[in-house]
Length: 83
Image (cartoon, helix red, strand yellow):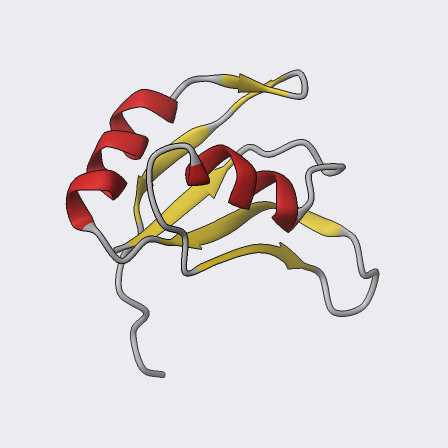
């Protein structure tokens, strides 16, 4: 399952997401999204977890939790639409 994480502190790295979500099960990938021009974090990212039960538990437990001074938003990612 692909999980969307928003309202991240701009200092949070992909490794931190991997570590946090790894407590709930296997993490296939963890990625912070960066602005192409400024190379600065956009304050959101995605985590891919192969086990849906683990992913749903992580979403439920982590939504609204404070990480590095910011209350994060965690939810199932919407499928990307073709342009």
